[in-house]
Length: 489
Image (cartoon, rainbow, N blue to C red; front, side, top):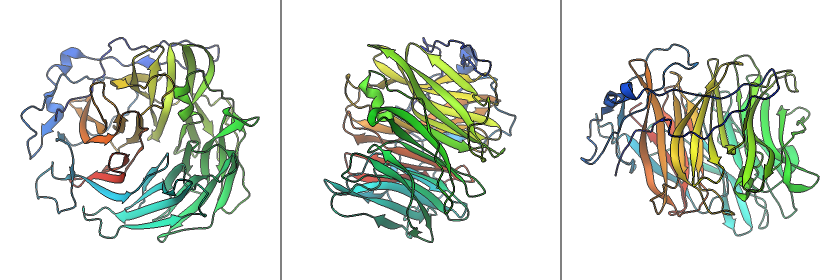
């Protein structure tokens, strides 16, 4: 098993930024690297109590200086370990690598999208759909207290509707008050369209369903964020004129128990590249301390064959409803490829973070890209991972990712990818740490044999109040839903 440090090197970053004629538009700014400072940066990842194999390597780490991250106390030094163990026995005292565990929590054939949340009461809730028959699936929530690898109190709640309906085709979750979890799912029946349904999970049970919106294609991406007053921001793909290939990101406020209110779709049209259709309408949302919600999403503008164009856009949504005037903070047109694929977005302590995949035009591989910015300031863009394998034209992408940000302002990413030389997809946990004021990435393989080539990835990530990661992913090779965490935090 080889371990490596993820880099930010500037090897031909194909992000050409064009300033648009809009006063609120901001261009991307690629963060600088300091190779001289990186050459001796082996101190960013301290040796764990259980040493990694002798063939473990740590190439030069990239260093990102400056940027909009506010001053914080440096986080504790982190360790790098081999592939995480899949076992449920007690963790060996003082063994940091043994504290990295992955544990199966369900099995079967899962639907397209899943989510994970950690409540303030310390419970983990995994939301997903599982097939019972070829034409039927049920919405499931598996929940537990992650105090030990045995997951002794793990329980699963399941809801279905007969032999021909597909519930939980896509699922998104958000933690509420106490042990409350907000769950939205794409419930699809034999009709051409499904609906987005909200259910409150509390006390180990799912509450009554409430329809958020209808006319949603099967498996359309969902996102949800919860406000302190009980309001929710929900996004979903909305077809235009009955055409599932064109439509918008429906972004709207929803308050459980009150009159439903869902926003009209934002303009959106897919490109000629079939690889983007799996992300049509994908968005990520977050609530900021100001009370405003932010939605980050990919919006395709136009395309010519072989030269697709897209933009990534961030907009504010107020709790009073409607887009806040002039709130567009990022409006980046990237004419040499597709950007904003599989977006993830976090807003914390006045800083905004986003990650997404960028597919250069006619490129042989994809890149995982991050943006960091504050307010209307110019974002800093960096490449977290390069050489991510892409399928032939017409095939679905296998790459997927999830983002979280810890209390030190450091990004954590879970990545499902096919490496160019691999015969199976892997799940990797990447995270930032700071040493002597410099930000560096380290990474570990959680599971290096997850899915067959070309199989879409399913991953989710949440951090708790101690910055402990709670990772959820599906392994198609073992037909298993896996929960992974580290018990040394």
